[in-house]
Amino acid sequence: TFTSYLHHPENIKHLNNAEINPHGRRVALGVGTGVGLKDGVLFTNGDFWLGTNEMGHIGVTAPPLTDKIHYERHQELIRFLRSESILAEDEPLTFEKLLAGPGIVRIHAFFDRDAKNKSAEEVGSLVREGHAKETLATFAWYLGLLVGTVQLTFMPDGGIWLTGGVILNHMELFDHPDFYHGIESSPTYLKLRQEFPLGVLCGTDHAFMGGAYYASRRLL
Image (cartoon, rainbow, N blue to C red; front, side, top):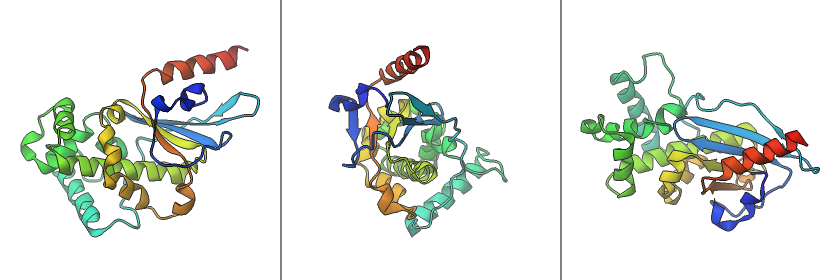
């Protein structure tokens, strides 16, 4: 996010109209085989500061503005995961369990118990083809909940920039209202958070560009 990549419209799917604070804290949030992020701040001299963070193992809780339907679904999903021994009796539910790797299979099996042996690719195809609407809605809500959690944790006025294999394979998530319902389920500082940029890094070469830029700054 510190390179010119961010300024080319074809590389970014903007999810709101907020302006980027060029020297605000930015968060790159990846959802793929795991859930991880990196936050950083760009300095006026072109250098930057990078944080060291762990995100995927943060626990999922029902936020204050969860409506009845989403709250009951959340509770039933936890009970299902425990009944299938995906979660131990005293083990907390984390974002990584639901969003990364086989997470989408676990969510889909909650609605279709015969589908628990399907692969993530098979379930992903069902979602993209419109044959798993409940799975899409549930996944979108938890992804929105993760974004809201990251907003509250980092208050990133430089924006949250989503990427990763799961994200890039399911761009339909960002057309679903439950994604935004998930973000808005945590009301704290919501008006301020709506002023933070939110977007998707659509290409696959930004990691190489970012690595090269990082190396160039360190070698100078």
